[in-house]
Amino acid sequence: MLILYLAVLITALYWVIRILLPEMTKPNSFDSSQSRRPDKSIEKNEPDESTEKLETLLIEKNKNVSLLQTELRILHVQVRAFDKVKILLDEEIHRLREENRMFRSELGLPAAEPKENSIT
Image (cartoon, rainbow, N blue to C red; front, side, top):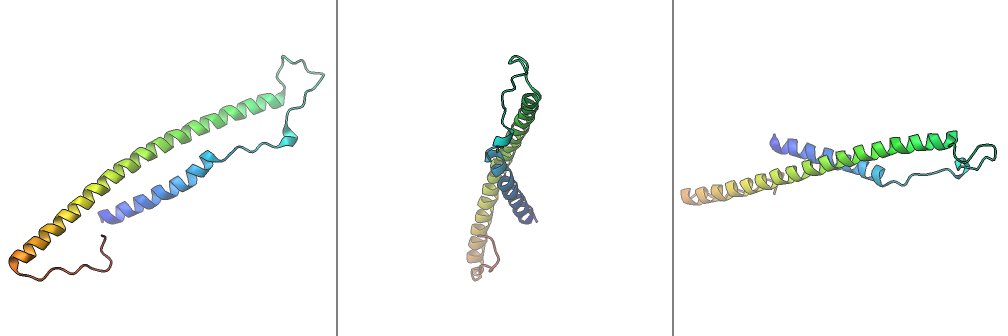
């Protein structure tokens, strides 16, 4: 049951990383037709509406990026913790197989044959 849970967790982490990583590294596309054009009627000290919209959009995007970075850090910590647990479980499986092999040899039983769908 634990192995099934770990497999589901690994699959979920894989898909989260596969979805989030491209979103974080994707360059922002900027339409050249929407670029700022100087308006002679507006003073240069006053920001125009498009500049204000772009600034608010930039602030919103920066918040989103910081949230995604935080989520990625948390995910990275979880993956490291998962890897530690996986290593411990692999060591325990190896130890138990060795003990099983030793007990079988002491009792004079034939060595256990590995199953086809066992985890190595």
